[in-house]
Amino acid sequence: MKKILVVEDNEQNLYLMQYMLETSGYAVVVVTNGAEAIVSAAQEKPDLILMDIQLPDIDGLEATRRIRASEANAKIPIVAVTSFAMTGDREKALEAGCNGYIEKPIDPETFLSSIARYL
Image (tube, rainbow, N blue to C red; front, side, top):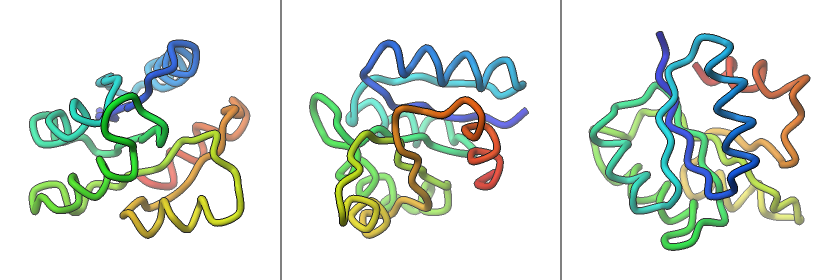
């Protein structure tokens, strides 16, 4: 069973992602801020990280950079899941070390197939 670390501070988004992933057979680990994401990435060794960008402490881009700086976590695919959809935001996420980018609101029709591409 593939393990996915979901980093999301919005309760509704978190519930939706967790529900869709768990009903599709994934093990889901949930954290709600960037500091927890960095610790959980090291401890849980997930197969994929879904990273919100707007987080209450360390933003998702900085959390991604710190996860990437750790050799143990340098290879884990990290996908930004964000409502930032301005010109250049995708590039900023990729520059920070994200492997992909999913825009919010999450589209249940395409979310799981988007996730599967990174596993």
